[in-house]
Amino acid sequence: MEILTIGGLLAEIMRKDLDQPFTQAADLTGPYPSGDATIFADVAARLGNKVAMVGTVGNDGFGECIVNRLKEDGVDVSSIKVDPLNTTGVAFVAYFSDGSRNFIYHWRYAAAGQINYDQVNPELLKDLKCLHLTGVGMSVNDSMKETMYKLNNEVSDDTLVSFDPNIRPEVLSADEIRELCRPVLERCDIFFPSETEAQLFTQLETDDLGCKKLAAEGKLVVLKNGEKGCVIYSGDQRMEVPSFEVEEIDPTGAGDSFAAGFITAYLRGYDLKSCGYFANAVGALSVTKKGPMEGAPYEEDVFEFLKKNNVSLEYAK
Image (tube, rainbow, N blue to C red):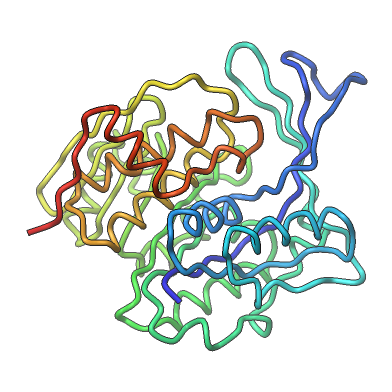
């Protein structure tokens, strides 16, 4: 196995039209397979990696929809448990014309939150290249948190640990977020903060200063800047990688797709700037269809897109 991730397996139900808050009745569409780690796993598999996912679904149609999608795209689902007592987790999403979104999650007390270390297939940890963890998964409940902590501790020193916080102060206080994520942030080799998160974790004045501090400590830091692309920090190096212009249909999952793209390129030995371009292309393509995983590209789609944009990838020297 090359990549292992763990998290909430969710069915996403979304508003069909803009500017329809959940305070009133209006049409919905779905279910779409979703969840940050789920999106990461599916995209990484479509890009040609051997990927496994740890998670839990209910014994219902939503769960079957999610697991079938992961199977179709080549994800190893041997550590996905079917819970007979709880229904599959659900995320409801409303979109607004100013670009904002409103989420309602049902997963802490749903099947998605019922994860423990016993369901992890130990064969998946042998010669594992990368373990990908997210902060939002750790914030769900103690069982998920302790399972992620144990995986973080159990994987070999030769296994890369990548960490995407993906958790905002609206969910927990800044102090709680720092304490929750501290064990994984200390161990991780690759850190994927979004805007404001490097500043939050280091308590420095800007993301740039925070990323530089973490890079000086030996981490590869990849700051996700959305439509502005990304900034990569390694040692004393700082490189900006511009984004690509596409028509955005649905931004949900773009950051998770980006991380899957970056890890893919990194494991294949591309230099850091090429990893940034590859990840930006994956993230851009992911927003071109409605549904958090529906725009997930295959490897050939990414190479064709990069060629159209006159970008060539280089291997690390």
